[in-house]
Image 1: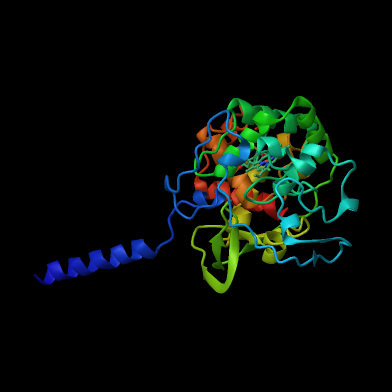
Image 2: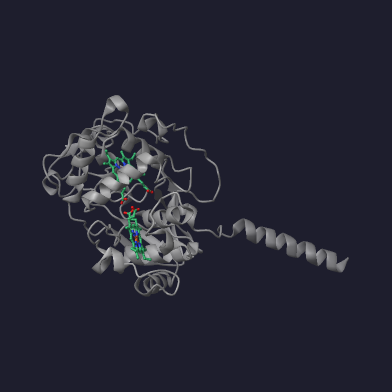
Length: 337
Ligand code: HEC
Ligand code: HEC
């Protein structure tokens, strides 16, 4: 009986630990979720669906008629203008090419196709939950739109509704719109965007509807094996959609060095990335730049290649042998550049 009691205690202690311990797989965070699960299901999105019907909409911002401004911009906008789906506020019109293609500025409301600038910003810097399109080679940009359309680029985590929306956007674009958007964003140089901090803790966060983690301003929590990526200036990113407010990724101690070894030597498990992605990993020819993009975005891509939901003959062998922790280490090192 003495032993039975001891084992019961041990069992309860292990169960309590399992309940508290962070889930072991860091990959769900890259998709905007805390645990691996089929829930919540994304909205249905058949091949002919108008793009916005596939999205998981956020709460609308209440209009109070106030004009808001940002340092460094001479323009003022109401919250409705900032958050507009079809003609979002352009804070820094002097910092991107002109004219802005109509599809980038307005999208196409009759098809519920939201403006590229609403998600990727006017300067193409984009956010962890969507993607980074400034400075991408034109051919690569067009190839990706073709892959979205053909089903060659889907999300390994089917909960990611905005990926489904992006797929439908690509299906509704005309050739001329694709070309105009690709040339516009390719002409914008990439600017520093992500800081990586090694730590035992990270800010407590909440998730936006689209899968952005936003600090609650209520202190920190243990990081464990996860990474947590948040806006550096949460209000500027969330409320103002400021395309100059970047991101911070918190990763466990030792992550960057581990990633550096894999990226620069292959570590016996992968290829040297610079062989194709060029010096400084700034891209080469039609191969895209991968330095200083958000950790979440890069982990998703690597995991999607590994799962085969994003098709690339060249990238498939690169990721084949890497563990989830190694994918995060590689993405963290790349983000730290
Ligand atoms: C609702 C938000 C949203 C809108 C609007 C949007 N996108 Fe996207 N875009 C995404 C998401 C989400 C991804 C994919 C992220 C991923 O693969 O994990 C993406 C990825 C991309 C990529 C691939 C980037 C890369 O590095 O491979 C391109 C190119 C792109 N979008 C172009 C466009 C264009 C052009 C428009 C406007 C016609 C547009 N997007 C509008 C959300 C959006
Ligand atoms: C043999 C050439 C080659 C090597 C080596 C290589 N890549 Fe790639 N990579 C590519 C090509 C080509 C693409 C574009 C493929 C596509 O169409 O999806 C790509 C795409 C990517 C993307 C997606 C970029 C985006 O904007 O969505 C990431 C991330 C990436 N590679 C990371 C890496 C990392 C990390 C390494 C090293 C561990 C690496 N690659 C090694 C050729 C290579």
